[in-house]
Length: 250
Image (tube, rainbow, N blue to C red; front, side, top):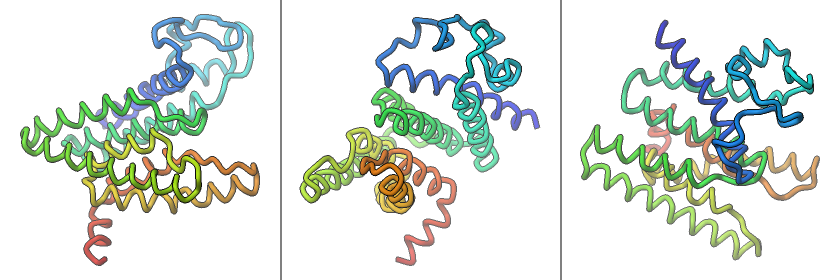
């Protein structure tokens, strides 16, 4: 029970940090200055106003000073990340797969924040993820295995780059963002190039209802593909045995 509570709390804390990280970096703002503050009256938040979930509930979703309503995204991403971390521990226990899954769901949260809000996938989280995945691979399986894993990432990146180039030729405009293509490198390191290719295909089916909805409701043809790509990666990683069977059948 202790570890279950710990993973949920850790996820909530990091969810709060990821929201700050995503919104600030996407707007080219410093992570250090200014300190956490109300975006309406610039009131610098006290420590008791920064406790994930509880501060939002205690303050009734309003700034303590100006009483302006705060965005519900704060508490949503805190709870969402907490649940994801909890599921990672429930599925994998303390293992190599746990650490990889935590990296993957952290990217999921960050990409949801930045791609849906600002249509961008940040480079820095991808770079940090690649480094962490490589180090983990070296620790658990050795340098040769880690280098092979990098090759899988490169292959997946190349495939996605080719898909983006082909899409540009067909549609006469950018079909994939640079962040989507770069994320494919991480995808290849986590799933291997065969399952990363499956994730790319699966993600198009996940994105289809959203794309149709955008066309009818917003009349907007630009769809943030990153959230669907990383979601497909999480689903495949969590249910890898099922997808192994699918790959074997076909």
